[in-house]
Length: 312
Ligand code: COA
Ligand code: MG
Image 1 (cartoon, rainbow, N blue to C red):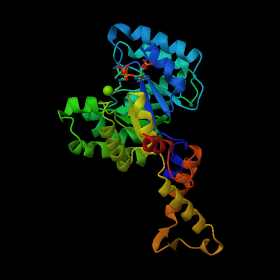
Image 2: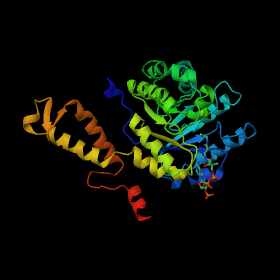
Image 3: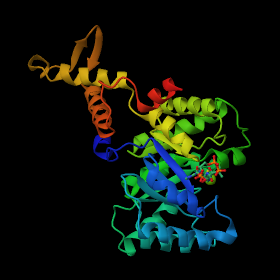
């Protein structure tokens, strides 16, 4: 079942938040190598400037930048005084996805699903949810499960730790140790229901080493990618959340081993002294396809990001 629920295969390594009020930042998007942009109408835009920010987005989408990156609009909470106008803008723009902040229940998403349906917005406009409150984390399994019932457009989660830390009073510390149980709940719920799941922002954008450590941690927790605040974070996020060349080489070996004549009726084989089960084949195929999509194969043993680093 989970196979058919898998999100469309595409990289989800790097999602840059771009404040919709910042025209200069909006104009940079066409030159950025991120997998997606989150055009923000919420916390990065002051109350006085919400209207201007919406107008900026209308202008931006009148001539959308070329490229294969996903365009996601983050609106204000639906029940805030800005929610209805934001939603109307999404209906007119029809971006790849609408991102709802502070989602705490499936009903929050169901309202958006209904508005999009009634306005005739095609289901290519997906719904994403920020999980960033205590109630959001507590209810994350039910929220994710709504994809199979009331909210078929639901496609992804983004974790918001700035809000979650504020509410839980867990301070920001290197390693995020007391937040790990919450993060893993979100990953588990996403995987159970075939959603993609994006790790939280790292605020200190001049701390390159700290950012890389957090990318590695997020990747090892099972996140697909990271929400970013600054263009300097794109290359390291693409690198750490991209398929590891060694893992791709191993995946190619698994596919080759299962494609031999004698392996056709075997579920378990010996690959250089390691037991490989047929169930590993599914993940191997996903990894190889993903690597091909982003132009990486096992023959390339250094990413462009690594090469840049060794030159300096
Ligand atoms: N998107 C696009 N371009 C960005 C950007 C972003 N999020 N953040 C910075 N840039 C651009 C700047 O415009 C600048 O371009 P320029 O040199 O041509 O002027 C360049 O990258 C370097 O920026 P820098 O001077 O290092 O930082 P800054 O002071 O301009 O911006 C922040 C710092 C934090 C204010 C800015 O990165 C930002 O607004 N980030 C997003 C915040 C956000 O969305 N928060 C809500 C979600 S948590
Ligand atoms: Mg938030």
